[in-house]
Image 1 (cartoon, rainbow, N blue to C red):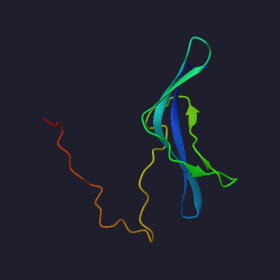
Image 2 (cartoon, helix red, strand yellow):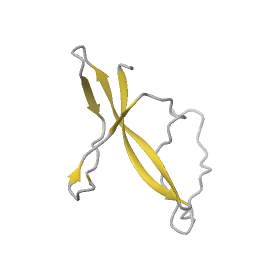
Image 3 (cartoon, rainbow, N blue to C red):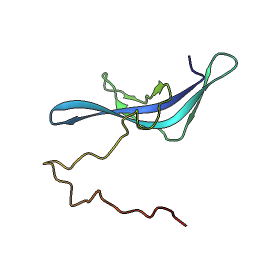
Length: 97
């Protein structure tokens, strides 16, 4: 077992009728010497309604992964498939000074 975990929020969404899950990292958890875990959140999870209709806050602790291994939360296309006139080909300077 690892001594460090990522705290992540899971968000389900649909693309062309297919359900997918996006994960957003909101913090980390470290194993303590006493056998417990210390959790440091960099963002606060938003409350959702649970199956019983009551508000709940929850997040997952998952083993750390490289950024390219975990699907990151990304804005979804506008309804109807349009991109709102946005152009993803934004030129960036190789170095910012």
